[in-house]
Length: 165
Image (cartoon, one colour):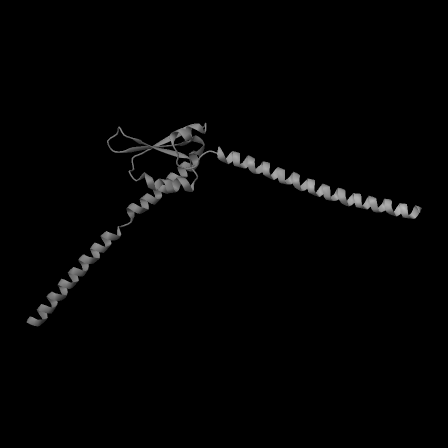
């Protein structure tokens, strides 16, 4: 009888251990899931009020609470600069000065982004210089047309000279 009781006690202890193991597993899973949910909620909350990136209005740029710097630009094709500003992840705002006769633009950006802004402008200016140096395809085509016309005229002159001799 005592052996039977000892076996039951041992079985009960083992069963209790298994149950406590299962309960512990479930509670740890729930705790980890809750921590993950809180982390995602915090991330969503940060994302909702995160600072805007790239081109933005002056109000949004000022709300970020940083000092602003500006550069004056006279180029009318300022739209092509946006590609380089996005590449260097610069937060900026474009404002047109309507009082000046040739259009002047002011690019406002965060003072902390000065290095990125200068790098973006250098690349932009380099690209613009390359564009200006390149001869347009239309001009090349028109020159080629003129050359072919001259060749055709020369051929007809030669033919007419050969026949008369």
